[in-house]
Image 1 (tube, helix red, strand yellow):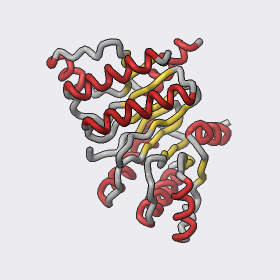
Image 2: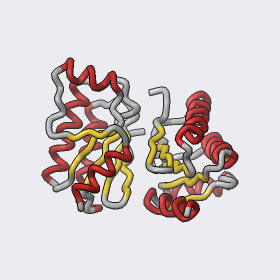
Image 3: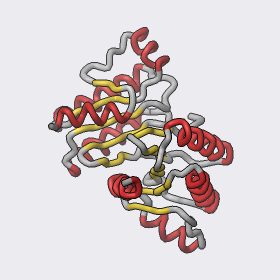
Length: 118
Length: 118
């Protein structure tokens, strides 16, 4: 597959990252996501990374950048489903996911975003 | 990645199929999904196939079987996000996705399942 699907749930968009990210896939995702935020008038973006065992500096930066782009388009981003080992690695690598909020799972992420909207 | 993540949303489970299916991945998914239905007490399963350009008889049967397993565990399955070309191919191949309901997108799939539950 060459794209990561973006699912619409009400006013939110859900992206589930399941495959290894490479440059082009990340850029395609950012293009698609910004376009969908505008087209669907989305107010929030959920990025699920529960399938990722490893988050390296490339993916970390990609998530940060994507969240910044969404913010400029007036949509908040919440990263959900981070595995404990990933949190440990991120801190050890000094990656702080600037400006990105996290939630334990998708239910809590939705609640967090819905609270923003109300 | 070796597994397809299963996301919990309230009483529903969401599976997004993004990668090409092969035997072992399909079996792992069925194992994981049936286990999660029991563990989470899920009443509905949404299978998103919007990323699939092609659904062959293997995937068609896999989806049908998964839905049958879920039904035995008292959970309904709705397939969402089917591309028009996939619908055409399925009919041409004579695959009817027995016992599987479909919805245009995830929002409508959730509504369909919530109506079942109420």
